[in-house]
Image (cartoon, rainbow, N blue to C red; front, top):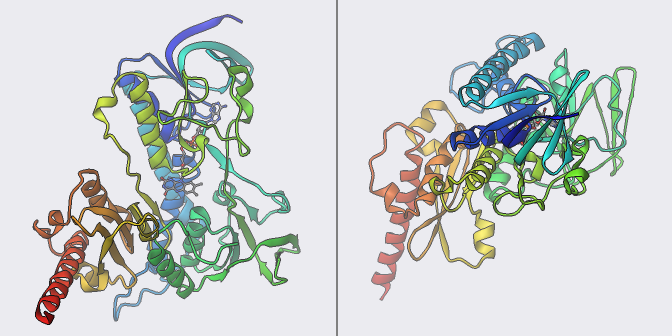
Length: 473
Ligand SMILES: Cc1cc2nc3c(=O)[nH]c(=O)nc-3n(C[C@H](O)[C@H](O)[C@H](O)COP(=O)(O)OP(=O)(O)OC[C@H]3O[C@@H](n4cnc5c(N)ncnc54)[C@H](O)[C@@H]3O)c2cc1C
């Protein structure tokens, strides 16, 4: 077979990382080809992960009327039975709209798109199979952004109706009355909350004793409490010993001997990088245990002209992070790195109910690093907008270095927490101190004003402490 085309860059995988990588390189003048095995662009981000799960969550909240809010005197109990058709109709519409937008973006960026399965023939040659046809292309550089798939641990009968992973859960045709979620990471916790909002009796099983321990511990403790209060039954410090199904009921036996009987099981046991079919050895690459690729600070693999970004390189496995990695990698590769900030502060959000988000350091991390710090806190219930929306659990926590009140970390739980942390993210990236919040005027009523509330509380507390010290002398 002869080589059909030569490119500056071949991008394998058109998820969030691949699309951003391809369009960034094209904007820097590179001749780019983007290869994906599916014509519906957007990868797990658009088709099976980020967007579908958040659409389901929004729809579940709207249909159930539950939200995490408490509007006194207003009956927000389930107003009508949500059917799976209700849920899926919206999910399908949102997904298709996004697929179209991404296809237009790729076309407008003059990126050539090939639909097919890609593999390496050698470090510069990529074979693409599409049905009965095969082609070969040559690329000076390659970006591998093939993403990840749900990891399926042994011992779960995935061939049985009612046993799902985080991809196949989107295929369900009835809302189960009861659901066991195995694994309380971000995906498991989010789906547990969504189904609970839909009235499903949810059991959440995890080997740890607190939800999402990478969060600031105040936030993960508050989330754990809120999740329990919502009616989700948590089985902490537990592992699944056996999972069997018979007669429409699935029995999950835990190592403690406890038995959970449910209509459905969602196994959310992490992800595995999609590298098996790439024939990496032909390019001189060897993946890690879960198929992941190792990269340096510029997202170069062990073969310097081959880059990798997104889920395929493992933790943290977020669409947001994957896009930033790809942008940085391609900016370095094609000479546009000057436009990027010198350091990445990557925010994260988990769309549980209530949602949680963070950027920068946790209090545990600051403490462990021996940094002298102070904390400012503000509760949604003390903020006019928080009161109006009836959000009971929410709070914002700001961690400042004591000596100069530089912002080190921002943590939030509650409605719009994922949006709220961006204010703190920008303040950190700009190396701001507390005066950026205390000295500016914020719109009222807004949740953004929580930054002022938290900062002024802290400043006033420090003033009171200083005054009482002086008067004691
Ligand atoms: C339920 C769920 C909820 C999530 N929620 C969030 C969230 O709220 N926020 C967030 O930031 N992230 C979230 N994520 C994670 C997010 O979806 C992923 O981090 C993101 O999609 C990874 O992007 P990617 O470009 O690396 O890979 P992917 O999106 O997985 O895309 C990879 C693409 O590569 C293609 N491909 C693979 N192998 C080949 C091959 N050999 N040849 C051709 N094409 C190939 C695939 O078809 C796919 O289109 C969630 C994930 C899940 C499962």
